Length: 362
Length: 122
Image (cartoon, rainbow over all chains, first blue to last red; front, top):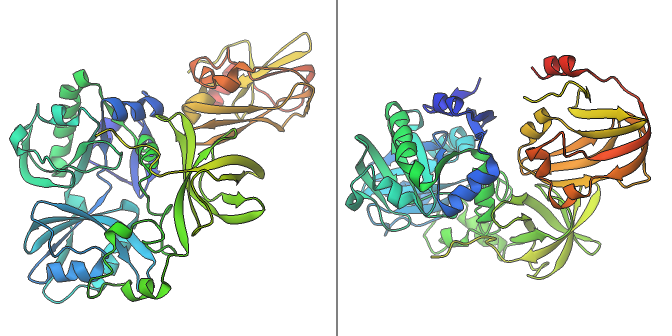
């Protein structure tokens, strides 16, 4: 039996098409349709219920040391009020999950993890805590709403004191009053656009959601489902656990080297990653030049040689072409190479292009 | 949901109209709504034989790919080439945006009338 987020009734009332996802009943799209929802985020603003995401707190004298032990990134110099992306690895370097660490003060951190991995992550992290760290899974006590798109700052400023909102990408502010409700607001997201993620009490979520939709209507704000969330992240070439990475892929292969600090004294998986040397595989971008859509787990051929397989693929609504990401043998493909992807027994032509497929104008 | 009275329907959500031995086949309102925004239509070619119960086209939306099943046996006499360039026409008007026409058409599988199909979709 799937769980419902505090916004379930709002999704149903708005005509959302509800599907099971990561143990929750969530809207895949609204009557607006995925394509228009996607474009709204690129040109105006979209509102997403991401309450399924997991939230875990780490507190105590050794909380920082625990995170540095568990995760590939280095949080030592992370300022208070900043977010930092990281991988979480097994001893063999394969990935448990990817996540974002929010530093609240010297000894208090909030970690946001993927919904589908939450139970696995919590069990793994609990088994590897250092003495003096208290970890708590607060996922059921937190609702999360993502406001994404170029109009997001103007919309949120209608409900909150503009000077209280985080300005820098990957920063956050606690206890922001949003339409009278206490929210943690971060300048983060999973769409490739500017925007915010708001964390609040489940009992406040509906009021915050409704208030945002009301004041955002003039700016073109529409509620968006999981479908647009996936096409937006793929167009922006943001990796998704279970696709671009999993327990068989290490973070360097997944292209997450920026979040792997091999210079740290140690972290779980470091020795295995170091022992492998240069990554054997790499993530590349493909645009489909033939007809149709390339999706996940489809073999990629350069001539007769299979060099890897796709990890995600879809039609990119803003770019108006089908694109895919693929994990291939390192060095086997270069930008501009013509390849073929086998789709339901048929070879479809594609070309290697740079990642990300879409990057917003700054 | 729009289910015109004059058409025949399949369990897999195709509609079919046979006039003077020529069948016109398309996707129902239910099908286009379930698929969502359609971005590619791959059709069989004029002159190809179609068999009842067999696929003659792929329709791809952002979310999914779906095969389209022919309810009739016969030979393809026309394909709606407009859909190759503008597949969203199926979303905009699925009973106007037919996929193929088949000559010498004979129904070769169980089909439903509008009332039965409406019950099937419920």
